[in-house]
Image 1: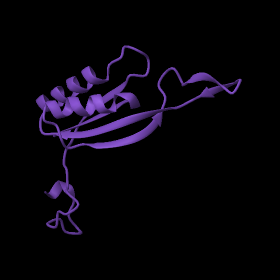
Image 2 (image 1 turned 45 degrees about the vertical axis):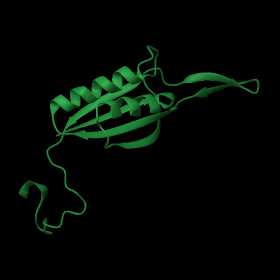
Image 3 (image 1 turned 60 degrees about the vertical axis):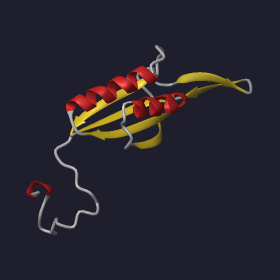
Image 4 (image 1 turned 180 degrees about the horizontal axis):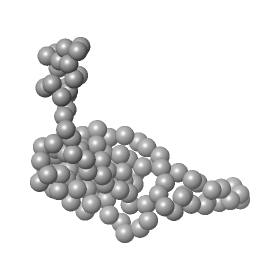
Length: 117
């Protein structure tokens, strides 16, 4: 199994979600996050005063898929939907998962670990 994490612009939320639906990736966790990349934010004039905005609002998608093929499809869909060509488009991270344990899993005893599954 693989976990795909994507951090994208807020205005690309619906585009990314729609692109994932098209390829039948329906299960995901979505969070509002704040962050900055290598550009370390930007400057903006507000009410005549220059303000440095160090972090910007983003949307984080967390998706677990069953295979590397599905991870590749998921990454491609997100990249196509989130791309603007400007700084701040976001990042996509792919992790290999060793194990996933549902909260409702009752067979794991107190002395057992996930390695025992």
